[in-house]
Length: 613
Image 1 (cartoon, rainbow, N blue to C red):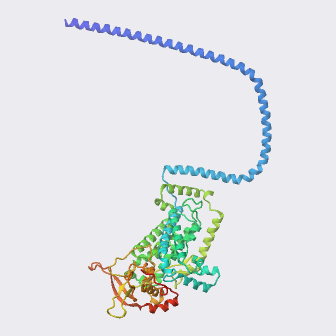
Image 2: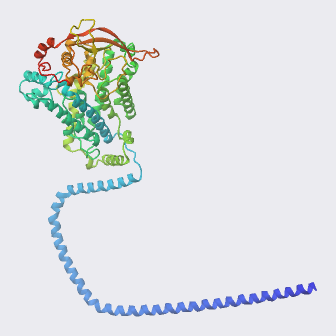
Image 3: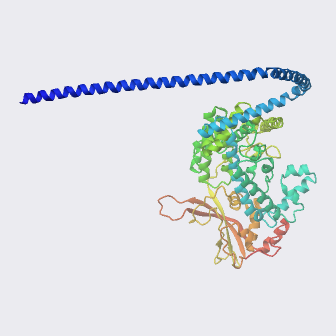
């Protein structure tokens, strides 16, 4: 039974397979017939489209035959018109040929300018997509850094002048400038050129100098404003750089600013690159400063050669390397110059940290900035500025007229180079001389000078200390003397030394030098004593503490001479200094003693009512 069942199953499977194959064959036949019918339909449509196109072509042919004659007429008319226009064009060309020949240079310049503009757009477009690497030996950014750094020093210097000039050289100052100006006027007469050479100052406009204080404030205020403008813009021109230059109202060290006087008032918008004669002029300046300082040490105090000055000064060996070896790197390739610049700046920074030498070290950094080019300074500026400078370098490399200096500027650059070379001759002779002079000028405007510092070293730190007393007898043991405290110089032994550079307390500075001399060499010291006797407000503003201000003034004022030394580490003392009395520097003085001296010197302090509080 099972076999019969299997046979039936197999038979049914065969019948199903045969039915399925017949059905598939029938479907395939129907699909083929449908495809044949579709081909025939497509073929019929193509034939109809072809017939329609032939009919349209025949109709267009008939219309074109009708328009042939009209087209021939039109062509002949156009031909005649064209011939006439060509004749007129030839006449115009002949007339314009001469003009074209004359305008060709201008057109060429315009084309070059258009090409440069197109190149600028392309270059800026590429620069926007990627950061730029500036080329070496280019000084667009150097000029900006130089001007801003110098403007910072100028701003501080003019701020000092604004705060202190009236008290020092004003109408009732320690050394009134009117006395000096009158003396110069008597010596040189009324010739303006001789006056300017003797004292190049705007204060000649204030003659007869009855009221000088407003002029001092005007000069200092104007200078401070212009310095801040240059500091913000990073650019200047001849008017900005020359206006504030007044040797009687500003420390002499600030004069080197004039070397960049031909430039625009936008940082990178000036069409001419910084002249190389100025870059090398600054390098020549720092070379003279360092060599002068180094040579005067070798020829001066023997302690510089036996390396014992370090017991009283900073590292002696380091001085010799910085001042006598590194300056020659100025004339070597770029890597050596950068090494020299880094060494000089680091050396000055150490001196700034270790002492209050006013603007001296800051101004020495200024020419050292010229050792570095745009590639070195690139990291200090934004990407937009770097892109702008990269484009200027690109134009400069192509000798584009857009950055080509004009003939006037070229002539000025050459003239300045010749002037610097000529004025450097006596400076070089002085450097090579065994009788070298320090800090000397060989022409009235002090453009190229010889320098030198610390040719000899003082082995002691001495200070002048003012005191006052109300006692009627200054020699009495019972007299109580109270000290006047200055703002920065050593006084009280427990007072922490100050660090205020580049700001400058000019009276403190003068007191330091006075300690090396006698009081008769510094007559302003006697005038200061007189001002203390009347509690003069202007003099009191220059010091930190007047023990008699707001009270009855002292009857007598004197000055003592002390020797100061630092206390030793680990000594357990809370004081910074120890001091030892050397003796009396200025004997006790009262108003009756000073009045005839003041009258003879032309000082009004003891004549006019005292300005005290």
